[in-house]
Length: 249
Image 1: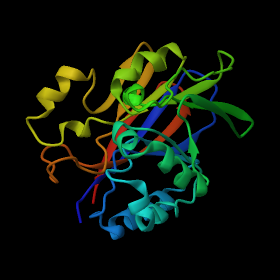
Image 2 (image 1 turned 135 degrees about the vertical axis):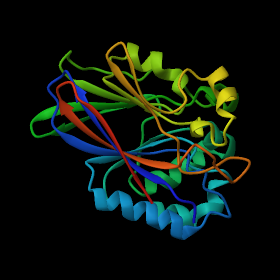
Image 3 (image 1 turned 45 degrees about the vertical axis):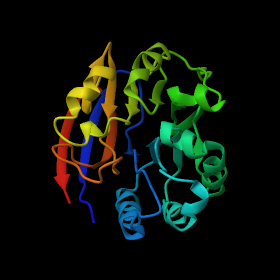
């Protein structure tokens, strides 16, 4: 079973946010040869963290979703509310079909939309946009409508780091994405940096936090080198804080 890192990131926000915990999963690339026990272990880790919600930032599947029902049903065991956006692989293998399956678990698609959540009498907004490859698959991609006061924190989800400026213009305090796999195999990260503004980890842009998740799966070669797979857990607090702690499995 491929190992992964459990990473905790504490983010400070200059807006009046409730202290809350959320988990980001990305780039699982589930396929017909995915070990169901690995998915079960990931679900167990997420449930043990007891986050307020879970964000999946694209490339969940790497084959026709209808061939993955047993594995996807394991993912349906996540106990916290789940929100997700499309990735390029999801679009290639059938995003509409995948949405029907995930919606059956109560997961909420954030492609081109936003939702308002309330915790401890304070509001936050989750927003997302479909992957940049959407136009090749006749799948809609447009800016989500966000109606929020200047004091409301927005957490924006997309698959690719390239959408960071869209998130910033939408007023996001936090932007989470994936896609890069952290380069997956050194020195491929040099090629990734030619086409993506950020490769991995925590960054800051005009007051907005950016987190690029290395993901949990692989593409092409089923191996990683100097780009550890990860589950990212965030703690959002009011104030200027940023702490990154890594644990290993």
